[in-house]
Image 1 (cartoon, helix red, strand yellow):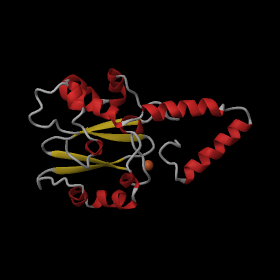
Image 2 (cartoon, rainbow, N blue to C red; image 1 turned 90 degrees about the horizontal axis):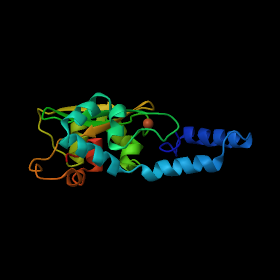
Image 3 (spheres, helix red, strand yellow; image 1 turned 180 degrees about the vertical axis):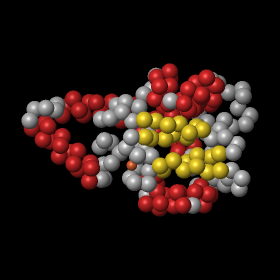
Image 4 (cartoon, rainbow, N blue to C red; image 1 turned 60 degrees about the vertical axis):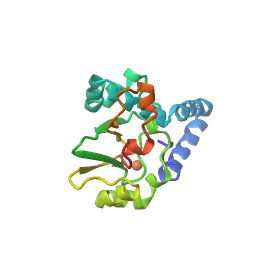
Length: 196
Ligand code: FE
C-alpha cells in the first residue's frame, strides 16, 4: 500500500516497482491513478460515522459488525477494498466496562477507507510508543478521563488487520435519526482517543 506509508521506505519501493511495471507495459499508470483517486475520494470519516450510526440503531447489524466487519460493511454500501490488498477490519466495541483505543506501533496502519487519511499525531512516535505503555495518561492528554475501573484495551494495527472503535451511544439521543446520530460521531471517537 502506498496510500498511508508515503514517507516510508516501502512507499519508495512501491514507486520503483510501479515504474518498472509501467516500463514493461504491465501497468497502466493512468488506470492506477484513476483507481487510487477514486479510493482516496471515497475514503472519508463520514463512512465510519455512518457505520457507527447504523450499529446504534440496528442491533442485528451491530452484532454482525463486531463478529465480522468485512462481511457486514456491504450492508451499508461500504467495503475495505480499493487498495492493493484486501484488509481485514475488526470493529471493537466500547462498553461500560471496556474502552478501546487503536494504534499502529510499527508505522501508521489505519482503516483509511472508513476514516480517511490518519491525523498527524497518529503517526507520531510519541503516540505510538506511549499509548501502549501508558494508555490512561495518553487518553487524559486528549481530554478523555476514564474512570479507574474502566479497562482500556489497546489494539495494534498491522498490514493485514485494521481496527475501528465502535463508541458508546451518547445518552439522550433516543429521539435522533440515523443521519443525526452519524453527525454526533467524531474521528477521534473511532480511534478511541475521545468518547462520543
Ligand atoms: Fe502501520
